[in-house]
Amino acid sequence: MKRLVPIPSQLAAQVKDDKETGIGYRVVSVQLKNGNTFDQVVLSEGHIVEVRGHSEIPFASEDVAAVRVNHKWWNFRGWSDARLKMKAAAATAG
Image (tube, rainbow, N blue to C red; front, top):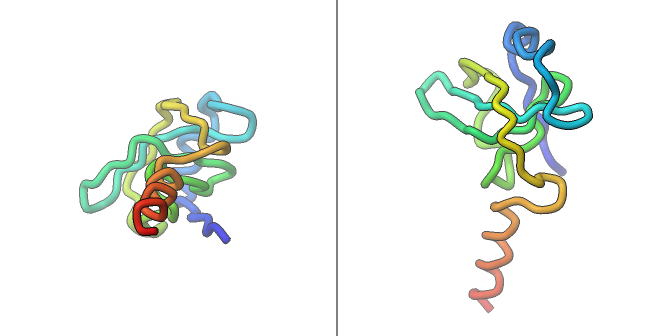
């Protein structure tokens, strides 16, 4: 089961009035306190739902320093880079 990661409430309030990328969600850029940035992150109702290229969310709520809506859309519901990588690895392992 996927784990949702809440973002700090003050950051959620900052993006709340920004236009949605799709119904009920925004694609955002997340900057962590250590300086790492993730450019395609799905945010819904103040929670991170998916990070492009990762099967699990690779950071915790307390690691988030900034969130900015960027609408860098991808079909996260149909497939993800992480799922493709896992399938490719399984195919070559057998």
